[in-house]
Length: 300
Image (cartoon, rainbow, N blue to C red; front, side):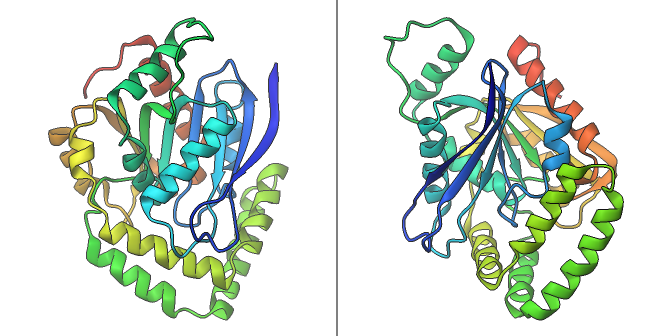
């Protein structure tokens, strides 16, 4: 039976009164893909990608609280707890830009927990068998994502600019973005609705939360975790991506990450590869997940 879109919340330490939110789309019998959004922190820019995946995966969307206090470990713990609360103990992680930074602490669980969740997914294990206490990933897709950001000075500059821009100017920019997006997605009513939500969510608190997330990126260096990762790791990017330049990300993954399986560049897309090329991105991610399930994935 297909799941109706469901929602759960998870309160974390000092999250400013807001809760992490989770929505589930698709049948529980399908492979699970958990989307961790980028700097904007919500599911409003991934609608077209989700629709393109309909019937192929159970798609789980996350919206972060506008916290100014959480560490990346706090994000990881809250997401794992929300997933387990919904009975989701394993699946693939799709980390978009900032969301990729949450993936690495989510891998910081014991090998026994990872193996337990993987066995539950692959075999018909007795319901009396021990269950994992944390969500255990089966594979990783970095969409415009990274390990250690290749240009930390650029992230610091982005934080200063974001902190300095007034909400008035931000509102004006969003007005023109919304007009363009409504024309571009005029035949996709669900996407149009999400664009309105995206604009409405851009508040002063939201801007401050984005600055905090940029600070977390600058301070984070998960290279040791990535260097010990043997789960399948893929990298998806648009050709034009000055925010996270893929020529500076892929060589490190290829040389140092044991789980590296390859990647794809979508030439018509930019940093927001899931939103600017949703169908091509969906076909690519679904193919990688199928390869991981069948055991045919090889290093590229």
